[in-house]
Each structure stands twice: as C-alpha cells, then as structure tokens.
Length: 310
Length: 274
Image (cartoon, rainbow over the protein chains, first blue to last red):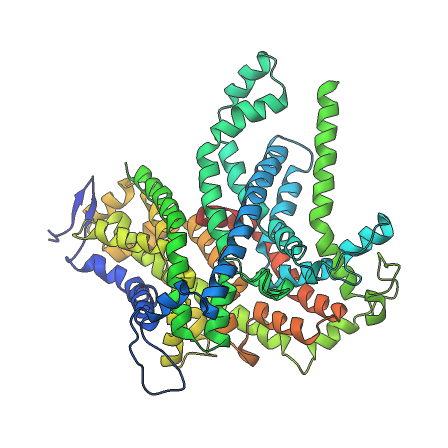
C-alpha cells in the first residue's frame, strides 16, 4: 500500500514522493527567481558598469555611479537630492492627510446610517481607477484656464484664478488632492474592518458614563486602532514614496522640477538620457532609504503569518 | 431628539463628502459631451447644453492612437496575468500550507522577504532583461515578469491554513493523491479567496502604469498608457481627453460595482496599489 502517505497533525501531510512539494512550487519558483530575484542581482551589476544599449563593450566602473550622487557639481547629485526632497515633502504632506481623513471617514460611515453602503462605495470608487485616469482628470480640474477649481474660485466665490499647474508650490495642490481623492477610500476600508473588531461594550460603558461621541472617538476608537494606524501609516508612506504618475501627468514635474518625484527622475535618467547604470545606482540608494519602512511593513506581515499558524 | 439631530448632521456631512467625491467624475462626463468650443466657455456650462458624441467618435477613430486595440491589449494581458498568477500562487501555497517537507519554512520566508524589494529597484534591470529576451512590445512583457509574487502566495497560504484539516486527512487515509486533495478539497473550499485574488490581480494589471509605460509602445500600449499618450497629443482639447478618459474609467467603475466586496478585501489585504 501507499506507506509514504502519512498524516502528521502538526505539520501537514507527507505526500507521494519527497519531491512532490517542489513539483507544486516549481512554476512559481521559476518565475520568482527569474523575474524578482535575478533582476535584483542583475541590478547591482548594471549599477557597477556603464551599460549602453548602443555599444558593444560594457566597461566596469565600480562604485562610480554611487560616488556621482555624493559629489557636488554633477547633474545626478543636484537632481537626485532635489527630487528626493520633493518626494519626502510629498510624503510629509500626503500621509497625515491620507491617514487622518481615512480615519475620519471610517468613523462617519461605520455607525448604521441610511445609505451606508452607498457612501462606502463612493469613497472607495476612485481607488479602482488607474493613475493615468485620475491624473488627467485632476489636471483638468486644476487647469489654469476653465478648470473647475478656477471656475469656482472666480465665478462662484468672486476671487481670482490661480495658475495652479505652473506656479511653484501651488503645483503640489492638484497632485496632493488628486492622490487623496484616489486612495483615501482604500485606507478607510482597512480602518472600517478594524473598527468592527472593537468591542461594543466599551462604547456602551462610555455612554453610560455620559461620554459624548467626540470623547468616545478620542478615548476609545483612536487608542484601540493604534496597531491599525501603524499599518496604514507604513503602507501609505511606502505608497507615497512611489509617487510617479501624478507628477508626470498633472504637472510634468514642473515648474522647474519643483514637483518632480525621485522615481520620475530615475526613469528620466534611464529612459530619457539612456543612463541606465546611473539610474540603477540611484534606485538602490533610494531603495535603501525606503528599507526602513519596508522592514516595518515586513515585520507586520510576518507577525500576521505567525499568528495564523499558532 | 438630540440623537436624531446628530444623526441628521452626520448624514448631511456624508452627503456633502459624497458629492465632493463624485464631482470630478461628473465633470469628466460633462466635459466629454461638450463640443470643443463649450469646454472652455465662460461663464462655465454646468450641463452640456449642446450635447454631442463627437468627442467619443473622434477618439475612437483617431489616427493618433487605436483606443480599441489598447482596450484589447488591456483585456488580454490582464486576463492572462490574473489567470497564471492565480494558478502559480495557488499551486505554491498548497505545499507551503499543507505538506511536510524540508526547507518549507525557509522557502516561505525567502518568498515573503521579497516583499521588502521596492519596485523601483528592479525596474531598470527588468527592462534590460526584457530587451535581452526581445519581449519589448510583446504581451510577454506584461504577463510574465510579475506573475510570481509574494503577495498571492502569502494570501492563499493564510487562507489554506484556516481550512480544517479533517476532510483531507480522511481523504489521504483513503489513498487520495495530493492533486486530488488540492483539486477536490482545497480549491472548492477556497473559492472566495481565489476569486478575491483573481479580481485583485486583474485590476492591478489593468491599472498598472509605470511598467507598461516603458515596455509597451504604439499599438501595443495598454489603455492607461494609451490615454496618457492622448494626454500629450490633445493637450488642452479637454473634450476629447475626457471622452477617452471616460471610456477607460466607465468599464472599471461598472466592474467595481459588480465585484465590490472582493476588490475591497483584496486591496486591504495587500496594503499596496501598485
């Protein structure tokens, strides 16, 4: 009989042959190693040579592309740090907005109310659109001429129009608001699931003690959601670091690179200037900065993975 | 009395926010039905008083881009990607959740740790890999590079772990093969998770912008990249731009209304949109 097949209640089943598990893992493993792990190491190599699609030779240059980033006077040095600062500024402004308003919206739609599902769906809806759709849409909303925002400013409020897309500083407004509109519903959904896990008895006890809804929100909801807030904040920080399509399509990175994100600059260096090696080096330096946040996110995911197993 | 007043206030606030959220969508549709002269007219026209389908007809037959071809590219690549992604991830999650073998934990953590690699780090080497494989401007470039990720394996393994073992233990005692256990027990019991992942990865591929922007050109562009190339062609001709945007957005909005539950769940589980 099939003596290989035994049940071990703790760890799972021993199936046919010792290589049976690897047969199931194989298709995933092939593409995983080929298109995720290999490019990582290939990227290290690319960043240490001068890779030029038009030439036959590939000279080894070591850490030259990395030094360029830290030596004054090179365009790489100037624009990498400038666009990195732009990106950090975007993170600093967009993350509190995206987390705070998600919590606010979740608190508004959590309690039973007429049309609750409709509101939830409406707030989440923009999140299913692609970044190019939302960017073109918000460029039109903020268009210098006849954009809806300027129409409201001038015709409804009687103020003066602002050249949103071409004024330094103001050009961030459509990018930040477009991003908020696009992805706040996604954070809201995570908060909604978490609020559902807070024990109702806490609120009932607070109500009996005469606590109003604001006190309940600040004294119960917010502290009970601290774990969720950590998760939402970390994923939102990582999402905001990835800023690309909005800058590219709403402002084109302008005026004078003031809204260019670091990923946009990296792609410009690679695909615009054909400096693939230099761009690969920048991507690694940028990736290292993000590693702080990806590590926290990894730790949170790993904790979930362990929790289910025990 | 006081309670119902509060309820009314909360309802009004929600209505206000809902209108703010829907306004850009309304404005997109409003603009797309206006003739070119009316889109920039002042005072503004809150309603398309001279409605026309001209913008839609023009973008659909434009010599500058083949919208229907882009639509087909998106449909085909997203379907293939979602299907193979689901297949590979489900096959891999099965032994990681249910079989006992050496290296199981090690391999799982190896896959999981790839979640720490930011996408931008592999963008350029992957692009060069596509050149070497001669996959630029082919469907292969959209389907295979992202087909084996950590998220899908992670999600399905967690789900498989939550399914009671009794049924498959009994089946194994009766001599059922692993494939039988997988197809007859695990898969039928995991339909909600499988559908969630399928819908989610379809949407992720459909909406992907950065990768196809660099690997797909001309007639091979996907819809999001295609309409962004319209965006530079038509520049300030917002009627046509909004018609193209609406044609792209409306099918997704309809699909969302139909598959809302699965999509929200997949997105909140992934914690990422890219």
